[in-house]
Image (cartoon, rainbow, N blue to C red):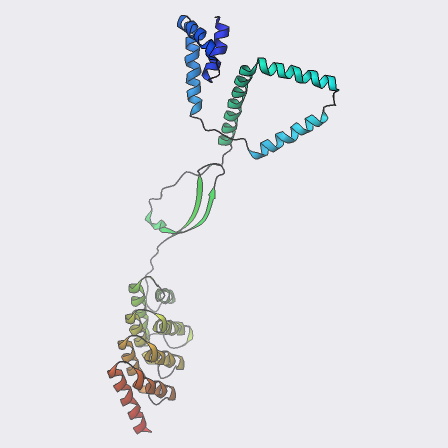
Length: 319
């Protein structure tokens, strides 16, 4: 066997296409020819390396464009006669029979080159993802939420957009509007009982001692205390809110209604007991007497029923 024939058989061996009857001749030639032996090893090494490359499919746009161009070219070919078509088909059939192994090798080579080109093109035109930046400054804060996710097509690369919470600290007097605004926000910190308690206690003390809690824009502090009294789940916070509302029970009907609501519906005995003591100066009010009558007969706490009854009797004596 000559080296030219052996090189053709080496290609077929690499892809498992060499017939068994020609394998013996090739093996005998390889035992005698060092050059062909190196060729076989190189082909096997290349075949093994190709096995690790990913199989890439052509994009749908490329396939569609190729089909359209093929259809256009076929339509532009003038029609042939019956004899011409028959002769062309016969020659084509004979050519396939004679050169099937070589054709397969050619197709594999073209497929490899096309796939490699497509892969390099995708890698070259792939969107560049910014390198991850590690912030060592702790003022960046924790991650608050994720606002967007974008995945690069045909890859495992994901771009995530997120927002950070940056903690800040401010120090100032309790009379400062910004400090009071932050304390009002603190009264609504649902996840932190300590923050809510401290905020309500500070605001309640300011109102109880009369530090700029008399009407005007400072009325929002009073509103914040009433909201805490009605809706906060912590009894300690509700008690602190009652203390801050004490100076306004007589003058502000809204505050009086909030305290009456606490007396009638609050789940804490301590809150209801404290509400009675706050309402004592206005016990002659008709709305207060009506709630007192209900509490004196329906409250589950004997002490609260007794105190309510005594207040009602004292009001009757005055009248």
